[in-house]
Image (cartoon, rainbow over all chains, first blue to last red; front, side, top):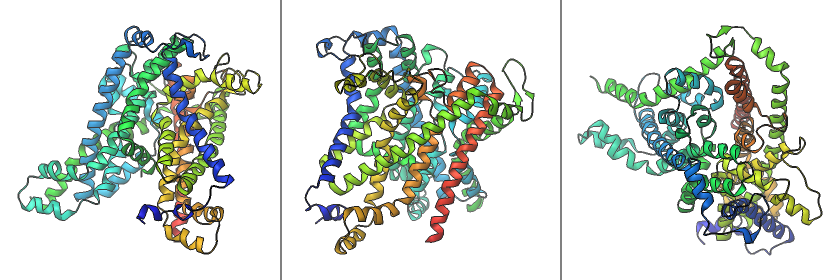
Length: 284
Length: 293
């Protein structure tokens, strides 16, 4: 028996499937179907020219990409897609760099007031983004930073990454860093060449978490962008709904475009995805 | 420079970039929100100090009353349902389905989590359509009459709750599942030897040991509920009437549609207080638990 088999449940493996467990199985399958069905419906509908929500098999034409062509060309989805990719990519990169540097400073360096400062970081995690959004909007407005990538990226960065990486960095042995120092390795090289490779798993989690947060962010892009050339996908999709409330095929094509990137990533990086997102709940 | 001093400077430099960001985009704004909440400010002229008038106004404002009420109903509906379902599925997978089939079903249940609320709302808005919508068509098979899900004052909020629950179960299920898997197997072995049934084991071992996770799941669920905006913005826009207006939508509309920045800040501060109270209660429970150990 390997350790997996010894876990909870293994003891009951030999037991028969009771009525209760059959019922549980049925519920689990039913709910799984309910989880995936809307997305299948979305894909199928995006290939129809339907103006009723009614779903007719004979209206589906997979060779007909006109909905996608229409959202890309007439509704600026292509630009929004590029914006989303750029903003999300930069958010992930800067979040990793800034958060890992701070975590390294907090965990492996000593300076007066360190833990007090860390408490401040923890405290900011409790503030909902919507509470600070109005003054941030006013600051950005007065500095003419609305409708910039900077505004879209900078708000994604927060204390969560620092806290997440610091916890992980407790496992990086001090001896190793000291040995590198004794060998005459310059300080920043230690961070770059010794610390970063060691914390790679947590960086992957942080990238995925940041990716999903940034890609799916809506309220801040809605507030901070007013030029269509700066819209992210979520904002573009919400406007598409306003303009074409009953053009269901078109709306589904827009939804599909916004969904496909996280979904494909999820297919390939399932384990890291679940870990990365579940981690956000264990923050602080 | 002594070694100690050099370390302090280095540490400070490493932390500096994140500190600047945090100071500018969390610490300073929170004080600004607090200050603006005591002023009348419409962006056209400088804020004028009005004391606590904004706060007094919030409690008389029928729009904000509806928003608070809707948010409360939303919380009371979604949090228990998603918590119980998530725990139920997690326990089922842990007991009966620790194999590829279970792994597959868990992965599928996680898909709604990765979709944005806007995407989910766009799809579900069409599923909820009165004429020809998938939901009404399915219910029609069983002879149920057509329901105007998103257009009816009594059903609109519940429809949004359904989508939220659908989207959240997978997330909390994963957290619960990890929690159950972390429980030492010896406890179950001993219980099995003592002749405890699965149900007894669940209520005597699993449930008590999952308490910290349940606090987390409930707290997180409540805080998310207080912040709901995207779903009702995209599905109903707050309508019909005020039926699905939420607290955050109240802040958004007040600040960015009516440009009453001061008033919106006072609502934001009240939202912050609500979140802090929930966090405080959770900490209280956690401390009590640690005390017992």
